[in-house]
Image (cartoon, rainbow, N blue to C red):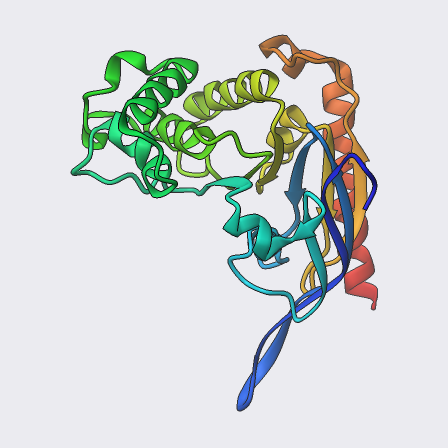
Length: 264
């Protein structure tokens, strides 16, 4: 792993099943290095292993072979040291806890003193522009607001890596675009490395420094598209001809793999 790499996957394979069940090869020969403060999107057809790859990095599952390293150490050790946060499609907030208490939860687990927890939760809620909702409950907030709380909770302990698995998939289009802007604003403030799973080509291009294109199962990395659009991204970025060029580049990479799969 190079000095600046946050994540390195080397010859990673993942097979599910066996011992009576037909084995399913989900991922094959994954090699990928992700640097500090990169925003990486994973995109590919349904069932290609995007979420599986994210869960391998997060040590929620183990690879069948190969190595996954986070900040120079095994993914399992990185998880035990709480070196990354996770945000999923559903915010998974606890309805009986206030918004502030939800953000405090990982800090409670880490045995932070109560006054430091509360101060940090307030700080994070201000960052996601929800400071006035600290004493509200999740069911009193919209879906987009709940996702902002989930992001605040995931970043509360300043992880070096944020894993996001289709966090905006259940949101309407306008809310989704606002949340994309919000995530980029937070990313710009925190300098956290982000790995983001999505099915949306425009979303991947708008958010990312690089888009990792994956093949149909068994999932392989078929292409990596550099996104050199100016930072910070704005609503005007979506009207930039280069934005549409990058969308076309990612779409063609997906189509090339589809053609290769059909001819093999």
